[in-house]
Image (cartoon, rainbow, N blue to C red; front, side, top):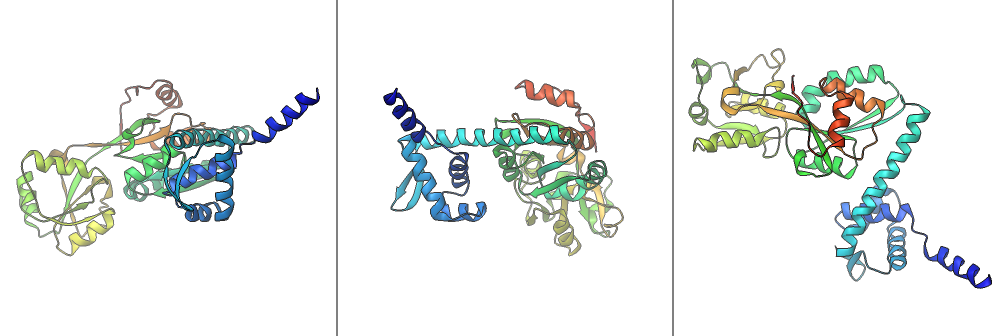
Length: 333
């Protein structure tokens, strides 16, 4: 019995892996192996993180990170697998908190959304207004970035959902739901020659400098593909992530603006002329990206319903249950 008690004490002493240690290695991997930046983001000390990582490696008997002196240089092969599992574990612990909160009060909590400037500026405001009227106690966080940045955030569980047109399909742990179709328009000054044409072609547009979104934003790839298909190479006068910046430079006469139709306000932008370009560049689809293991609280379903009425809780659950996305007809914006 004494020997067994001694073995039990040693076993317990050796096996004391902590969630905090898993969070440290996860965040280090997200901060490009910069322990100092990780310490700042977690409001703790660099020596404390380094100590905990060393203790975890000693317990596991392997190195998670390769080192040059005290500096971390890369993640080992074993470390990559361990960090991936750590991310899953941390995500599930967050779900445990959500479940507990759901049963305490389903009208209190936090909803984090990552999206692009176009969605945040032109599409989401009325949705957010309705949502906050129904759930005034919900804290809403909006993260803005490029489609790839926000897709990575939702994939890592940093946010609850991502709303974008591009990049979401590149992550296998996401279910991607189509929301609505949208098209583009050309923005020019009233005296611009394009306003005199009955039907505008890509050749007409390519005759002038172009002011539009940077690569990777707001369906820019669709614009490039349209010109390339017709072997056209228009001059790019300026690229921006913000439609308001594009409008500013169109007003300065730098070129023809190509923006999402939703970004044109007939009142605020009354000094510019919007010309339909749907026949030139086709339509794009805005989508919502969600982790398959997300714990869905009532208010998450409600936010999605307000943004895309066709996405009922039943359709969302069906999409998550099956790896293939069900056919859902997008609604017009």
